[in-house]
Image (tube, rainbow, N blue to C red; front, side, top):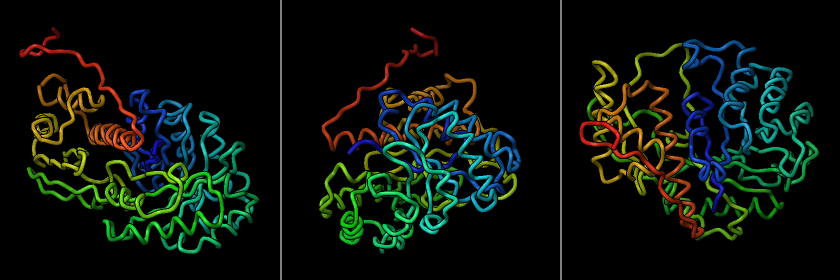
Length: 363
């Protein structure tokens, strides 16, 4: 069932997680990067970017972290602000650093002939984002694709089930949508996208909770219901985040120190105190992670090793909100790739990690 098609906010933490993920995982990841609206403060700039800066930021971050791998760039939250010319410039800058980048279009945009300028050469020329209501009318999807001069086999469909109920009871209706889409054309790939993680942080200060990975168990149930060949269907989620793309305006307030750690069946969310310095607070958070049954071990991913070292006072700092997002994302990517690998009989070895004596020195 590999590769894995996660949808990630196009933020520094997520980009860094992708770029630092081990090569044996990276080759199985085809991320859809969603650009935040221009009203949200950029973590590195500390303010909302200008329209000119958006294109250069995306180009710089792609070039640094994801320059030679397949990916999708989704401008749905900035396209109206940028306009057609600004969106075209964005893709011109982004594809200059990663020529494998594929544009993501929404269903109404398929009838805008200007969008033809964004189409890429190659086997996959565009991706189409569909809410589950859009996907309910496959003939309309096919008509839109053809109106832009595309054929189904040149398109990847991202079907978002964020606004639908998840669980085994929902699997037959989701499978029916996929089967109907499959009937109208030989799409390059139909990607299931969902997340059970809530839009709001589900714990208060100094609390922890487990969130069931319903997006994953629902997908497994869909596989048993659908008639689509497994190589035509792909799994995607929203990383360690919610599928509801809620963006803040302005600079925002003080970050809430916490980690989201994806286990086999649940996501463990641990939040520290809202008062005091971040590093001692996050060391306590990391200790709760490594002491939990969910912890995969230091060698599971580079993020797991960092969490372990944070917990053991073997780092100078536990970072900031961008660094926490990086750890959440990097571990999550490794977890899901391993899960998908198991479905195909593929296993992954742990990373090699340095050994430390009790006092924190290298052995």
